[in-house]
Image (cartoon, rainbow, N blue to C red; front, side, top):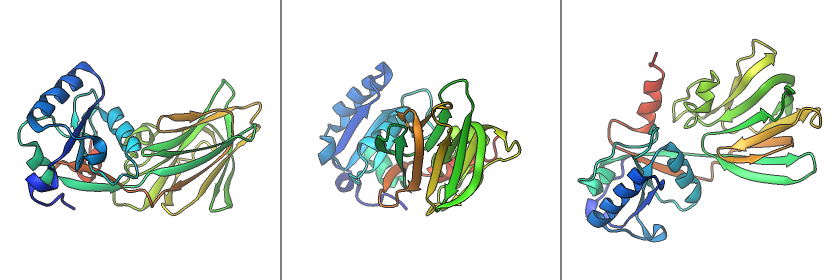
Length: 263
């Protein structure tokens, strides 16, 4: 799906945000001098200048706004970003390809009964807090699928996040338009040969912490962390549509596909 329309009308108002790093902030000032700077709530498009960390923070911040995000790399890692170039920006945005992604929605309860909720664009990960290995019970749509997973942790990933922590944990790369989630163990001890599962993106996953007082576990949704977990419910939030814009030939779909052939 292209971001079609007249360049001067469709993306007349641009809002520029940066990671705050000197290189990103200098680029922001040069672009503001060239294109102006609208308040984000009035902008037709938000231009993020930094790395993938900034892109994730920007997507979280403007979730629910419906505003497309066009990133340009002024950081160290730029998988989600476009190449930085100052000329012809409105035309680049107009010609770009839009990728629609849905985040995960996490509801967590700790051992004291406190409840927390957060969205995750990449993944929701459970990690042991101490030297004690974690013991977890996994249910999918209310049905027990694994009575006990003995592990350092486990994560649930979106297709967009499948090339991030999920890939580092030897999880599968998911094409962006695949209606799946990846459930991937992190250094599993038992069952030793379990490599995870692919789940429909309509599935509801519950992960319970066994022996929680002795084996404390934290849960992290992208960058939001909650400790001393009792259990967590995870599902795809199909009501939340996030729009990322990429230059032709460098769409998020193409980048994820390309990752599968790297060696």
